[in-house]
Image 1 (spheres, helix red, strand yellow):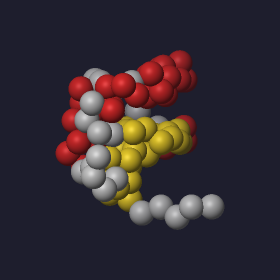
Image 2 (cartoon, helix red, strand yellow; image 1 turned 120 degrees about the vertical axis):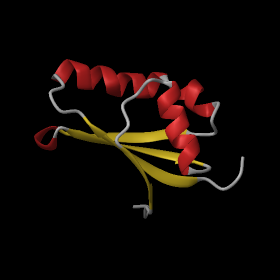
Image 3 (cartoon, helix red, strand yellow; image 1 turned 90 degrees about the vertical axis):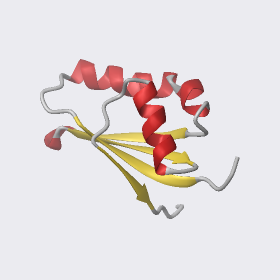
Image 4 (cartoon, one colour; image 1 turned 135 degrees about the vertical axis):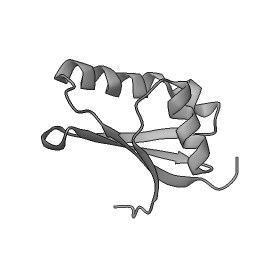
Length: 88
């Protein structure tokens, strides 16, 4: 696998119930093998209830692979952005 970059998938969850958000987050954990087919790995997801948004962080070869992996899993995608992280 080539160089892995970090990407954030912004998901707009307007009107979603807490149960729907939890189901989405569970599916992100369960979809690992499907993400791997695209060379993508889910790192973490942060839900921001007050903004009806969640941000999912992925490692992958490029933006298109991250988007395709999410699309193939029928996950909602607003924007996909390249990100820069710094370890703790």
